[in-house]
Image (cartoon, rainbow, N blue to C red; front, side, top):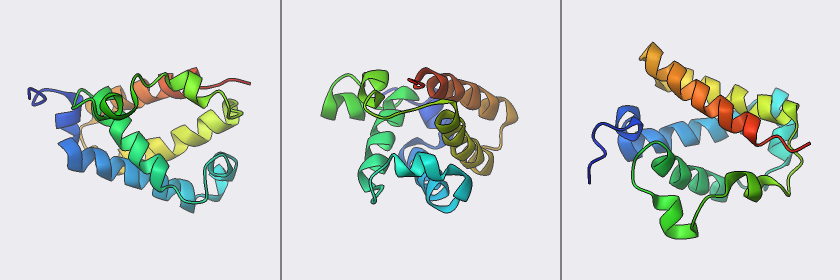
Length: 127
């Protein structure tokens, strides 16, 4: 299908998206300063990794894997059971920003992704 000019393709396609997701969750496990965010997740991050990979694939303009498997993401609605404040949002962005910094060399593309992720992180705040 025509994903060749998408953010998905620019990030490296399936392999690149998986790499970003894995690094993001590795950082969540490693960084003491995001422990509040980490505690909102299950002990194993396997399901979270899979769901974020599926979601980001479509969100970045690649195959709509999450929608195919689970239907519309309803991102905010699905996160309402979790108490997400500014601290949790910032902790999420701390991990995502580092993962982007480590993976994306193009400064303009990295900033574009960072800004898009920041909007999503702020949108998830529910307390």
